[in-house]
Amino acid sequence: MSIQYTVYDEVTGAILRTGTALTEASARLQGSKPGTKVTLIGSDPNNEVVDVTPIGIDPGTLPRQAMQVGGVATAVNKSSITADGTDTFVISPVPNGASYDIYLPTNLGLAQPPDGIVTDGKLEITTTVPGVYSVRLAFQTYMDFQVSFNAN
Image (tube, rainbow, N blue to C red; front, side):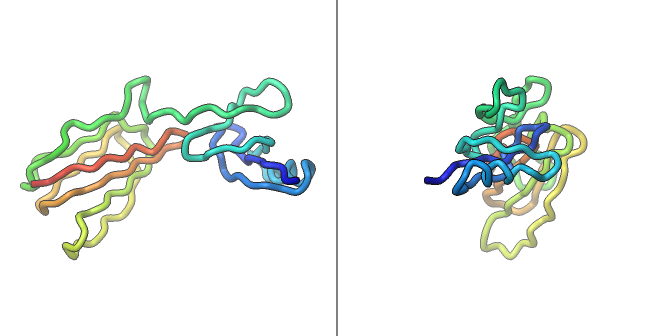
């Protein structure tokens, strides 16, 4: 018999890893690193966080929430832009500290821009190269925000 476990951040509830152990004791030892705890439940880190205000020995899971700031959902201003260097694709509001990745159109020989961190609550993108671009934002226990747009 194997015991499912989930190791999570004791402050945010972010699921750090999941696994199985042969005994309950060995499963409980998985959360011995400072700042982490373990629960004997199976979890899906893509869709769940651990409830950090549990009642009893083992907490349950909660669904990860869509990215937002102050109760306002993260959204985009439009679905396409003109590839003229001035038209701007804007994602806002974005939590300060969120990381972002921008994926460029393929097969154009473009250098991938470095990943970054949002510091002013929004991400603005302009381009002079036509094509389909994708953006992924990640922050704490929010679900990743992913969007694609076309530059004509």
